[in-house]
Figure 1: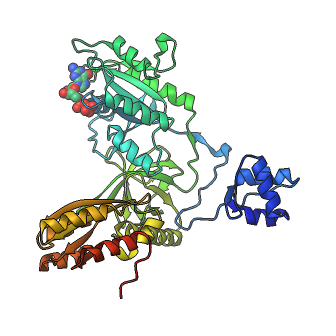
Figure 2 (figure 1 turned 120 degrees about the horizontal axis):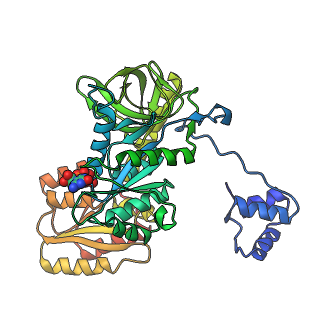
Figure 3 (figure 1 turned 90 degrees about the vertical axis):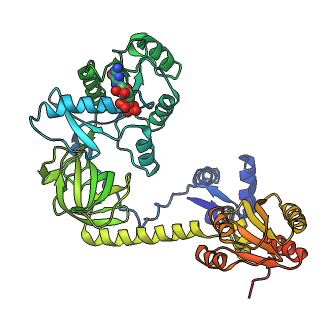
Length: 476
Ligand code: GDP
């Protein structure tokens, strides 16, 4: 999606200097090897009276291509709701009350089990609640690219008002472009002041409808069970406006809500199906885990044979525990296996990159790659005077690219705790007239920590300086 000035010039059949001149006229100072983005390239091409075409993005072997749905295949699906808000404002109570009054009462005798999500009925329509309250779960899933929530219910206690996590929740919902319905909770409490809550929320951009804004705010009490029906009706109203749709007649696509390893049942993953229908026997992949759907259980502990869009189900049959937020796709067995392998390989290299510890030999490489901005050093020496001299000289080596931090300095042999410190802080150890003891040596080997020992201060400083500047002779 970007091209160098040189390549662009040759593609356009022009001199590089001509292209650079045109770029300058567009206000872009570019050198011959500089990359320009697609937009710039196309503006430039039109300046020269031609056009450029964007290449289709290369297929990523760790991704399963998305199925495009024909709009005419889309049908209504139930809304999925997350409850957010400040701690102690009543998220859990609200979820519990809604569940009790709208599930158990109607499904007489039905024992609901916790599967991370449940469905309730209102006016003959279903609403799906994700029952891990709080925006942590919401953000964790979003961080993995998953968006499962259609509507956020923001719980604000009427006697406490807007608090820091209320504001966080508002910001999370806004950035995910998820509409917010406010539940002003605990209105049964003495000191409850819904108007004050409305006032405070208005200051954060949520203006109540009765004040001319467009945010629905419903006074409720989770304890007294008041306002809950109205709240659910409002959810359905907003859902209607969102015109939520999905195609149930295709391979399933969903998101892992939670997953665990159960002693008796193996890997148990709660999946929210978002598109298509998941069936027993489907071969599936989620993250690096794959397998076949062996059994499915809904939120009322009933075995089911299929799960349609917006249905949360427990899925048995994955070979490995996936992570919350992973997407789950039904795909043929071979693809599932191959893509899972590719993902695993990718994950391994990423992990390796992360665990790469600093060693003097590869210091410069890491600095150059921009992976290292702080060089953490632990200094051990035989006498205090040497420590001070070393410390000062080492810090003086820092430049614009790297900052040198002496994170620990002490008199005595290099011990295991020095190594552990180096390991957690990605640092290296310099010993002057001291050696590592046996435990330290073993730990350093395990943790992959570079320990350098010197008898001349100048040599130590020289080595670190050479490493920072990329001139360290490789160790033989
Ligand atoms: P969470 O941290 O947001 O999940 O809040 P909880 O549901 O744990 O509730 C915090 C406290 O507020 C608990 O002691 C609840 O009993 C109480 N609480 C929740 N809802 C109401 C309500 O509607 N009225 C009253 N009076 N107390 C409530």
